[in-house]
Image (cartoon, rainbow, N blue to C red):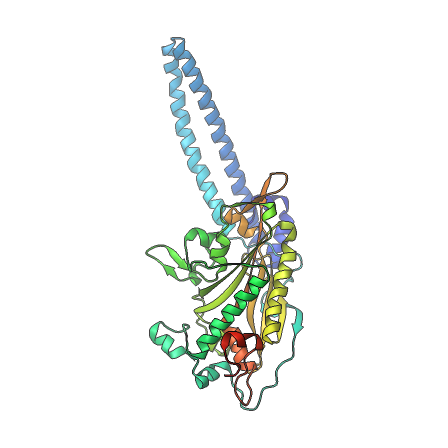
Length: 423
């Protein structure tokens, strides 16, 4: 959530950033924020003035009563009743302005970093790095949705029977491959200095608002309505909310967490090869990395996270590229996002497997996540997160890119976890 002071003090910069995002009615919305804030402050001033007057009258009444001037005291008591009614009315008005302002700020996305390119869609994203060579597949190679039938490692039909579309069942060596990838990713993160946590997969409304899934993505999340809880779309939500309403010490930085969780998203449902098989699911597994950073160091942290994810893809032997997302393709809460995509030789297309983002103070403002520096003043921290990695499309790329005439060759780094090197 943007700070009102930021909007007021850097109005043109904020406006330019929102226009880069193609945010509708940006200028009018920002002016509305400032008008609501002005009305809120004026109401607060009136309330405080009246409250001060009430306090003075109370003291005067007490003094008159002590002096035995009961009749004079009774005369000015009526004024205190008037003030109480006025204060109550002003408090209601203040609370309404406060709520309207909060809801309006919730509707405004983060301001993009200056390096974010303009653009309206994924077609306008900027390719900043490509790594690896495209594999040459043997004749008769197939996409992963055919391979999983041939090797009987993932069953979509059985998942439909038990739950519905987008909830596959991993079987035999398919299940082992899932577990191997999770363990590999967690072990690599631990080596890189990330502290492992195992978060809950249900969160409350406060957590959803804290990281920006609510109210923006409410329709994309599964809800346990009886308890007003939500199934997490990513481990980012519970891990980052560990620091909600926390004041850190500057010496605590950097804070680096990693966690594995299943993820649940209702967004799947379109048709076509681009969402076939493992390309898009309602439930999938993912290892997530989260940084809590000093504002001066957060973009160094972003580059570190991006390089770390690239290192995982190198170790898996997958050709990949890195994109800097344009304003029109960025997530609502992000200031700068890098997407990592692996190349699928069988599908002859790029598959997104990770997003690494810096949210600057946007989430921290919602979370009330602050820190104290040497001067003992509190300020908002910066939050970052990234997929390291999401499993479905990694599995799809491993199966498709490693096809040989003998079978599917497993990445060397996974063999110790799998106990086999060929499917």
